[in-house]
Amino acid sequence: MFANRPGLADPTGLVFGELAGIAEAQLGTYPDLPGPELRAAARDALGVLDLRADDVRVERTWVDGDLVGEELSWSVGFGPRTRAFLLRPRDAVGPLPGVVALHCHGGMKWVGKEKIADGPEEPSPEVVRARAAIYGGRAFANELARRGFVVLAHDVFVWGSRRFPLDPEAAPAPAPATAEAPLSEADRYDRLAGPHEHIVAKHCAVLGTSFAGVVAGEDLAAAAYLRSRPDVGPVGCAGLSGGGLRAALLGAFDPQMSAVVVAAMVSSYRDMLDGHVAKHTWMFYPPGLPRLGDWPDLVAARAPQPLMVQYAMRDRLFPEPGMRRAHAMISERYGDAGAYEAVFAEVPHSFDVPRQERAFDWLARHLT
Image 1 (cartoon, helix red, strand yellow):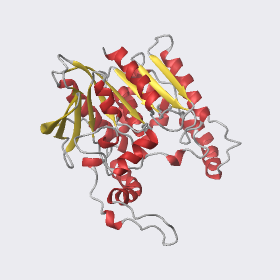
Image 2 (cartoon, rainbow, N blue to C red):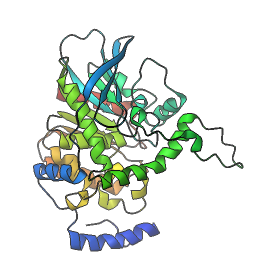
Image 3 (cartoon, rainbow, N blue to C red):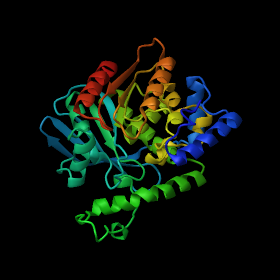
Image 4 (cartoon, one colour):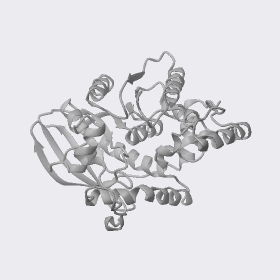
């Protein structure tokens, strides 16, 4: 069941590859549960919290050419208030389809929603850098709103307005021998936030939930809020990388999620042992999931409801065999329903402009 165990190139992966055989034999990893059963069991295993967006406030509004923006805030019951951007066409009349735009992980927690959505201020240099690397240089949430959608982009647990109060001054300085320029406050914070994720994941586990379970609970609350608005019709979601992970969880756990786009975040777990596991966030490894199914099983558990998965075939975070296996698994679960669309692109880990446009057109077909 696990791929290439005898020939693993990474010595660490070799050890875990051998352990995988024992786990498979004794624990029956990666069973093939029916979609509804898997969704319920996975929600329980992840400890997905039942959260609500309470006390929603409009903090400010602005006009950006053909768009109207609102900065919203709400409480989910713990931690600082969530901040979100709501974007819609300026002259729109009547309810429009809605999309929850989910920011990525990106090793960048100083900001969240700003990685994918413009507010009234100019983006910071760190955001410009991130967008250039993985988003084709643009704020995809704003571009999606210009296509006739109401788009909600919110910060989630440990990002942006929801980040922990770590002291950027405590970040390790660059080695004197390097010519590295002084780090910005944002970059210094992110150097601390990376290892701090281990602490977050451990606390979530002690509390009976998981990092993924808390994030999914907040995303479910955001989606419910968007659906509650009188100017919004059917709601879908889209995200890249960690945002794609969040989109997949929304698709699995929100029965009212009408269409889901997951970009560069789908591979079989069992093909990742040769040097790929350590590259990812704790959100990608919720406890107990392999005893219920593989990651593509959960992504496809919403079948036959609409799902687009974009595979970046030059992605260093995922092995090509894992992506190919994932596509085969999802295709099998969807069968001839026709609601699964796979996009294979010879690109690195990204949600670039051509892939964004492909997703926008697909969302329009399924939400309007």
